Image (tube, rainbow, N blue to C red; front, top):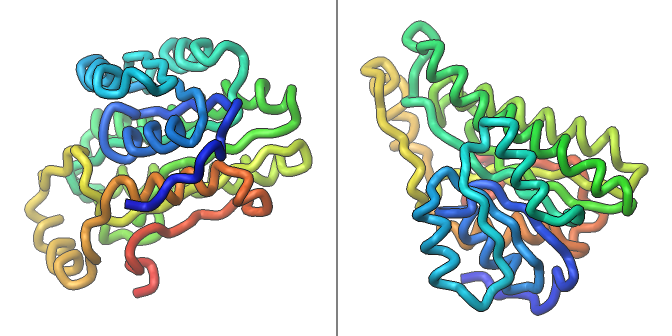
Length: 252
């Protein structure tokens, strides 16, 4: 497991979405162990309760709810008590690997709401707090699917490509005000994200490509190491970058 940097986030407050499991949970723990007070959300109250119960000595605040709803975004930001130094937009859902002709409206709308619109709303909500103090770091969790069509169905790929563009735009607009915005683009990671195959065509087209190209499955802690580096002062001159954290998949 990548080592921690003691007190790297001392005195800072971080908000992490989807912190109940996987990459989000690993990021919450790393930030807290490096000194941050961490406010995190998850759709599962049970996962958050388990997190708080397992690590009672860490400075964690948990807010259960669905990040796709605007009121939950506001509740999450309010729990930070008017100070947010770091935002990690981590939460995301898959799309059943559905091609365009098989894609239903409900899947499209839900994937875009969670993966893209929630990222926009949470970023929009924290920016005034960051701008007021003239500094802040935002890290979005994108995906290899934002680079290539073979990693998912059309909704997930579209959402993550849009997250990449949103990341760069945010970086550009606020670079002179001390705000940095970057993204990590993981490949396969050992998480509990649901990724069923709901399309025979997708299995025919995508499965052979994935079988031939996908690298080893990464640990969530490896992604958290990249995320917290981007969020830290160690990456103070890194802005608008989509960092592939994928075992070399993007080099193919």
